[in-house]
Every structure is written in C-alpha cells, then in structure tokens.
Image (cartoon, rainbow, N blue to C red; front, side, top):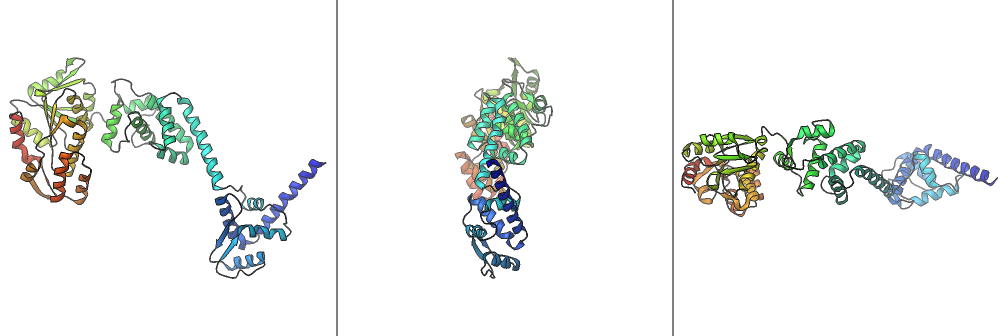
Length: 439
C-alpha cells in the first residue's frame, strides 16, 4: 500500500510539472525569461542570480505584468531567478519542482557547464585509456601519454580531431603509434609509401599533408627530442633520420672531386666521375647506400650558385678540388652529404649570396656544422666591392632578424642598413684564386 502511494505521488508530481510547463508554453511572452533562467542555471549549477531582459516586446511586458502582478511596461527588466520560481507557490502549481518544470519545458535534462565539462573530461580520459592500452610498454604509449598530460607536441591536433570525429581519430592514432613503434632500427632505409602500405594497407596514409602523416611526424619529433619540422625539407630530414625515404630521386645535390665507400669498398661510380673531373648528381637514394665519403686535402668548397660552381670546376680542372653545389637552397641531399663529409674532419668552405635568403642558408649551415664550416668570402669587404643596385623589400629584409651566427649578424645588419643585396658571381675570380692557392 505504501509503495502504491509513493508511485501515485510521483506521477502526480510529474503531472504537475508537465502542466506547469504547458502553461509556460502557452505563454510566449515568458519564453525569453525561461531561456535566460536556463542559461543562468547552466552557468551557476543551481537556481540563483538575476537575469536581464533588454528591449522588452509588448507580449513580454504583458506576460511579465500578469505573472508577477506588477507593472513591467518598460524598456527592460531585471528579474531574480528565485523570485520567478516562488511566484508558482501562489498558484495552482504550488509545491512544483521548478527544475523539473524547466526540464519538461525544454525537453532536456538541465546540466551545469561544470557538470558537462566533467562528463566531457571523463569520457575523453576513458577514450584515450582505451587507445593507449594496446601500446603499453612501448615508445608510442609514452609519446601519446606525454602529449596528453603535458598538452604539447601533437595535443592540439589530437584534441581538435577528438571533438570532430573520435572514432576516426582512434584509427589515426593506432596507425601513428604502430608507425612509431615499427621505425627501422638500423641504417636500413625504406620508402615512406612502402612503409605506410605495410602498416595501413594504404601507401598514402603517412603523406605529410594528411593527419596520419602529421601525427607520425609529431611522434618521430618526440623520439628525437626536437620540435615539429615546419617546412618540407625539415620534414624530409626528420623522416630520413628515422629511416624513411621520401622524394629520394628528385632530392639531389651536385658534387665533384669526392670519393665514396660502400661496405668498405670504393664506389666505382663515384670514383669514375672523380677521376674524370666531371660533376656528379647524387640523389638521396644514392646517399642512403654510402657509408663514407672523402675529400681532397680534407677540404670541400660549397657554392650556392650553379653558374659559379660550373665555372670554378672549369677554371680549377687541373687540380680537381672537392666541390658541392646546393642549387640556391638546402635540399636534404646536400645536408646528408655534408654530414658524411664532416665525419672525416673535413673543413667546409661555404660561400653564397649577400641577400636574406643566402645569409639564412649560410646561418643554418653554420649552426649545424659549427667550427667545421668556414664562412668564405662572406665579409663586409666583399659586400662593399660587389653591392648590387637591386633594392631589397622590407619583407625580405625582415628575415635577417633571425640570424644567429655572430659573424653573419655583422653582415646582416649592414644589409638591413643599406637595403641592397650582392651576388657571388662577382667574386668568382677570388674563389678560383683561393682554391688554386689552397686558401
């Protein structure tokens, strides 16, 4: 009997809430007030505070005046939430639960922003615990857990994709984690497309413009404790460092007078070009099979400009010095070749253009190779002699603000002051003379 009484009481209470909600639905002039009260509840987590109503419409003025039994025929109104709820105690809805009424009115359960946030965070934690579990005890687990806990590395992109499509993100993270854990462990190189195919059955999964490709790069950056590579060359370099080849044929450099060894045997192809004094175009794929390189007299001369490189080769053909041409930019192939060269205590003489882009290349090389790299014919005296009449734009000059090498900061400041570049073709005679004299 007692249970039946409680059940009947519950039904009556629910019926009262629905009847009250129906009353409000039939009073359009109170809708904005109820919407504001709902917003206030979601903000505070309880009934309280006040709501502001600006630019009251005629039906709102009439409804509020009738509801509160006082004059609301004005432009705006400030209403206490509790006073709005207490009005019901003087009506046939006395004793009704106002929160139940609001839930019946809006057809949804009222939750505070704090409650929603807690639910969101709990669901998110459960989701990532599930993603992490298969990779326990691996580098991938450590990477992902660290990114989530410290909110760095790939956290931004992971969080964004979680909100957009968590089921798709789960697949992406699975691929990225498997990709990180299965990176080549020795000097063996594998093409990125083949690697992606082995792990995901799709050769394009780890393309750098795709989410999986970006996640893998973030994971590899974590492995090598470096920042995410921003441009294509830096990305290719990081992938190469981890044993993955990309664009290995079109990524090349040009050299002359350099010999190479593979499995302790001299490379006959390189040797043939060296003996003939002809320049050799080397791709990243060629370099991946080379263990050691050697330069004449433990010196190598590096030029940015292919025209200068070609003329130097012709003018110094009798001694055939070791030379490299970077083609106006630092392709990964040039860096890989130089990395192998400096391992043999070779002195690298570098010269390039006196413009923002040339100075930036020189600065990157100086930061990478330190004392092994000598900035050659890169001083104020040379700049004075060959300054051009081509004025540099403000946008290009701004690049010089990021130069780190003290030696290059001097010339960078001079270029910013004068606003003109200078180009290495006019130093050709000096280069040839220096090389013939052994610097």
